[in-house]
Amino acid sequence: MSATAIWLCSEPVFAMRFMNARTILRGLSLGEEGKIVLIAALIQFVNIMDFMMVMPLGPDIAKVLPVTNSDIGIICGCYTLAVSFSGILCAGFLDRFDRKSVALAAVAGLSLSTVATTLAQSLLGLIFCRILAGMFGGPAAAIALTITTDAVPPQRRGRALAIVMGTFSVSAIVALPFGLELARLGSWTCPFYVISAVGALVFAVIAATMPSMTGHRARAAKTAGRFGALLREKAHCMALAMFGSSKISSFLIITNISAFYQFNRDFPREQLGTLYFAAGIVSLVAVQIAGRLNDKVGPIPLNLATTALLGLFIADGFMHPSISSLLVVFVMFSALVCMRDVSAAAEGSKLPQPHERGAFMSLAASVQHLGNGLGALLSSAILTTADSGALVGMTTVAGLSIVLALVQPAVLVWLAQSGGKELLPRPAGRGAGR
Image (cartoon, rainbow, N blue to C red; front, side, top):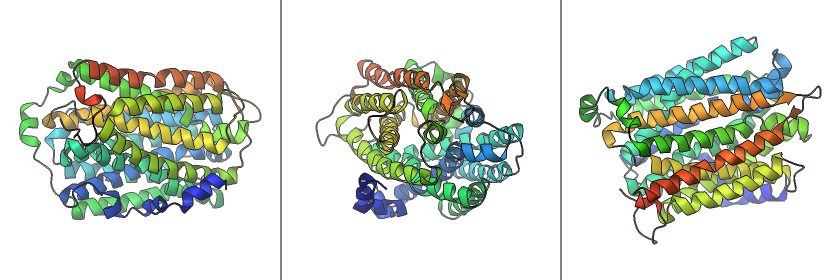
């Protein structure tokens, strides 16, 4: 392990991976508000684990099932398109139900369909099982963000969303290295059994501790069938374009990192878990910093800086032999993607009215997963697999990723110029509330 990774592991923030609630929720109310944020984080953790696991396991799956490294983008793309489709279906009626009931149904379905993935014996079988899992992943992603924005007031929402979105980092720190080791010592199916078991535990936690959340239903009933009204707002459409383009940009790269590192950069398979572990630690710290910066100075300065740095590391890591080490490129890419998304999510959540929020968050989650799927499928269309297993065409994929990454800060600037003054830099101590 590099000196950088050793230093990171020695820092006090390393203990955050054990999810001490009082430490993580500092600055939030520790009553019902803190409980809801933790439940949302658990839902998102299971969802992210299920979603992320296929990508680093791609080369392992290719050794057992009749698939190639470039097929992994198709598998991941079909999953995320299913998430998008299910989210759009749910957006029209999500606000009509108790948030607790939606959370229970989404987690139960996700856990059961994850078990079904282990039964796949072919490319088509794997695609079918991942589509089934994706049909529950859309509502799970939407409800996690919805209950957070319902429970937390705007002035603290950036930090709350950073906690929920920080599950990406926790998954990279804990779940992915553990899953990769399970697959290396046993079979590629082992991690999916564990994900399903964790999902069952989260289901029990929701059933036992989550309060009923029905305050939104009175107004939602009056606005049922007005889902199209969300899309008639130009600001909503621009925010959705921001979410989608950002995910296409990221998943052009993310889907193929494991295969690219192993077969194009000769990175050892046995060290892949350490790579995700180090990236997760840095991302977990970075996403909490981003939440606080977003609340204090506004999203535009944060987003412009992180987008510029992201472009530099994509160019360095994937368009030519890297100047930086593979570890540094991977860690910085992961951290910067997470930091950019915090500012976009916090500002996007302010656009809808409370009675529209479930529908908008479901639609936003669907658009993000649509972007994930399009990015994965587009990378598969561009890339080919050499006889050695190496991916051919990564320079084109990386260049396209950089171009699409520029959409997010451009939309934030447009929103600010269109009247969203809260997007501009703020004096220290001023609230972010709307």
